[in-house]
Length: 154
Image (cartoon, rainbow, N blue to C red; front, side, top):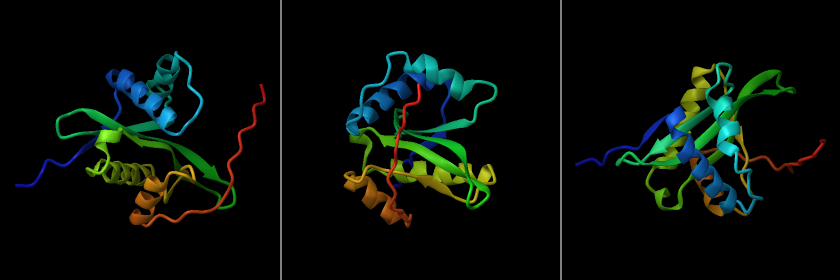
């Protein structure tokens, strides 16, 4: 008997509370500063507004629990003079790892890129996250060494 494959689907407004929970888990996992308490209020209009340019795919366990997400937006590569899909975040709850949900999310991300007419996907991961690096390497993705900066201008 084949196990039920994971489900990957676009996020819906009713998913926002669970998505925010997963984001806070992801922030803690990556040892980042806590995010604002009103994250859901700020994120909802960006995800579900009429002019949304942000796509979030959710991974569900066979039991229907939302256990992970991939957040993507379209970016423009100036040197290539073409757009690509930027995967800003991919996260799976700790107990959901190792069950094919990550691969299912990446398949969904690739399908989204194709649907949008984009030729490739780019993302980053912390250099200490060996599990993610191994996963992306197994997918056949190529890494490019760069340093990412953030510059507050407010």
